[in-house]
Image (cartoon, rainbow, N blue to C red; front, side, top):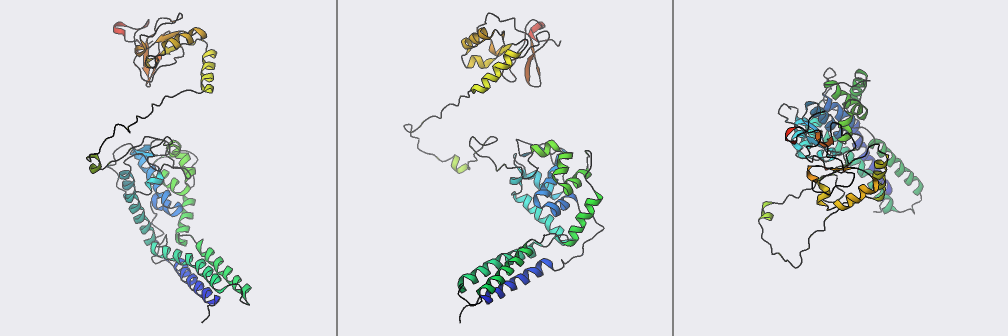
Length: 394
């Protein structure tokens, strides 16, 4: 029996009819219009799984349980003992290190909590069930495959080839139209519209449950209004959060770790000293543009001062420092870690220093720009110091 194109067209329309029944038939379970779902369910209705996790992160941030880590990541900032919501608890327990929201969405606990939240919305008649949705998508995916197989097997030599091609195009167009049907049911779309009317976007920053519902309904605009720093630094805006875990190379935004199983750690290997080569030492260097900019700042200063720290001693650059100070005519004073460096002709008495916010700066009458100190290096004594070499507050 010869193969006919209309068999494939009929099979494709059968698939379309089955997918239409699954997508357009009323969802069992009447929605309760009086009960308003929580913010995470609303976010799942509006923007999917990522939006629901974003609302959970904002709720945890308001509790002080999480904060932004390195750029584009979220990290734990406190105990989650008071957290009772399943999704929030899953998110908090999955943050064993600073990760982006994309990595967090793949955590098993978070996925199970999101599936339970989705199933609850489906039982409430707000979303199409997962099994019906996946089955309908599979049927629609099979429609163009069936049509293409018919075109390839029958060939273009048939007398009514143009009619068959037109029927195939119409079949695929109907499949595309059904593919664009949203997963939200009409009741879910009506609920979202009613909530947007009841909770418009605020004009000023708020706190509490209002923030969660605002983020659930309005997305990035509400995040920028209520939690701008947390949203930007944590990678919650748009498609941010591109962190894919630790990458042990120079492009990684943070440190890298290698987790070795215990059997690998206890395995004995033969070491060949002839093939061993030490890694080259990384020595940072400044570019010419950076050096010119720094010298420009120095020359433009009204009362410049170079504070020589321990880095001068470690680099054995005392002679170069003296030569640079003589050329630029800049006074030099050492910190406690920089003692022992030769003093240039313009070196004044070393001023007392005090710490403020982790940095060392001159105090008292010696207020001038400090250059060359290492962060947090100890310093003390000088003309404005008291007994014992500890600086007095001016």
